[in-house]
Image (tube, rainbow, N blue to C red; front, side, top):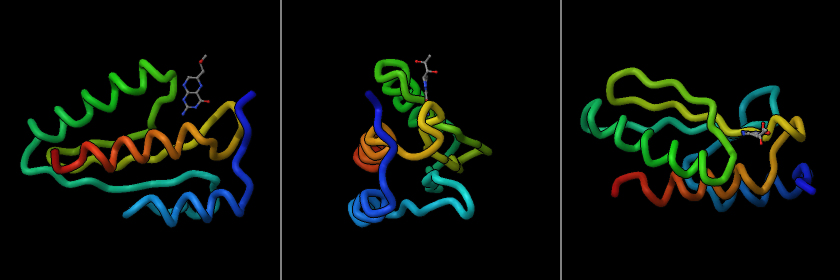
Length: 97
Ligand SMILES: C[C@H](O)[C@H](O)[C@H]1CNC2=NC(N)=NC(=O)C2=N1
């Protein structure tokens, strides 16, 4: 059963997630990523999309040209879960690759 992270777990997770921050007024985390051009941004989004489809956990995101703004939350628990931490970790790992 997917569990909602406690406030303590959220704080601990954020210390491990470089460049991610809590969304004001919402149990969600966000990060903005900048790429050299749209091609690189969309290639990144494609990799994240394949991960999301495989893990059944999808980002909320916005893209304009070389910028991708990502927000993560687990709708099924109305908050943050381990799936958000894992997806944010994946995103940090592939960014700059
Ligand atoms: C039916 C499907 O498994 C669920 O709707 C999944 C899909 N992707 C999801 N993505 C996110 N971010 N949160 C969810 O709760 C979620 N639930």
